[in-house]
Length: 406
Ligand code: C5P
Image 1 (tube, rainbow, N blue to C red):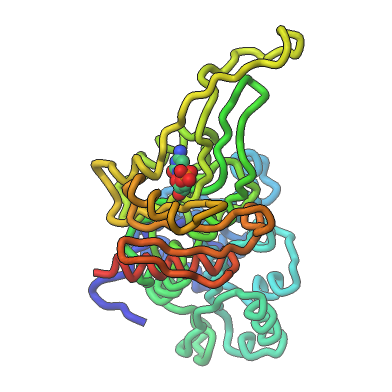
Image 2: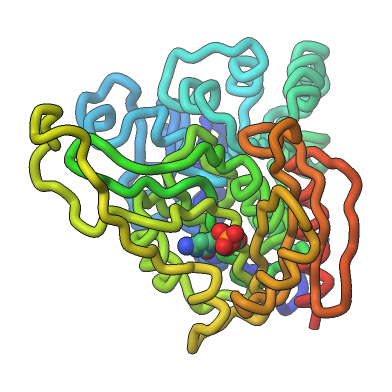
């Protein structure tokens, strides 16, 4: 673990810090400061017991956010329900994690705000246990730790040393800097794309015809969302501009939701500068030239004739932008002459790489979870084997990391 002169940065990362009731809670105030120093935003939940050791006011002053303490408080629920609190984080850190809270987590109990948020989140969780060494060694605690780790909960510490009651042994909470480093590792901040900014488009766009109707396509957003997640895992500060999809927000990614192609382009331009842009969205090629102000009536002289106009090409616009990302990657969904058309598209759009895929009927690419792609670059064509979309994303993210390596 390096505590050297160039600390890892966590720009824009959102940490939900759960402080439970142990004497080590005083160190959690320093932990808030350390996270913020590195650019992370910290929201704090304190258990009732934690408030016996440190005050919500101190945590609020350091985090520059209000502190959440009460599941039943109407204010908490109206301003920020526990579900939102749990989901609007890239990482949940429990420090100190008492034997009691670890037991609740292992059992799935949810009887206060902290335990409820922990049960309600699907974000990565890092616990920093702190307790008396006999409590740490107790078979119940050992079993709870095993259960939590088997579920993917990550742990830092405890360390050996002097404990609060004058005893010594294993049970001291890890130091704030160690916790920050562990958090950074989980968030991929030490990865090959740390300090790089990535922009990804995903999903379809919807182009309104009238107040209730629109033109769209069947893009699921699976591939684009997986790419954003993979880039973030390698440490990139990632913005995902997504059309309407069912996919959950990938962890560690800033998601900007849009509806139309025009909104998607504006959101992409607002996310510049970026080191890499990956355009995976299935942008509607056309939109209605005029959007009817009222719902078009069935009786209004037979079926309407829609006049369409061309949408902006986001990939082409980014490829020729004054703030062009160093690497611009597009997709080409083709049903014939896949490679040939992809080569032409690469030149026409001005992007660096095209991932070409065959979407002929029967391939199951659209909306499915696997994909067979060819990476088309100025140097040539690479055929990738059939892969899950998540693996296509992993491979692409690694290739991007190699390409952007200093
Ligand atoms: O021209 P075509 O739609 O086949 O190109 C596909 C690639 O271009 C994809 O990467 C897609 O995200 C991007 N694209 C775009 N804006 C458009 C149309 C396509 O960014 N209006």
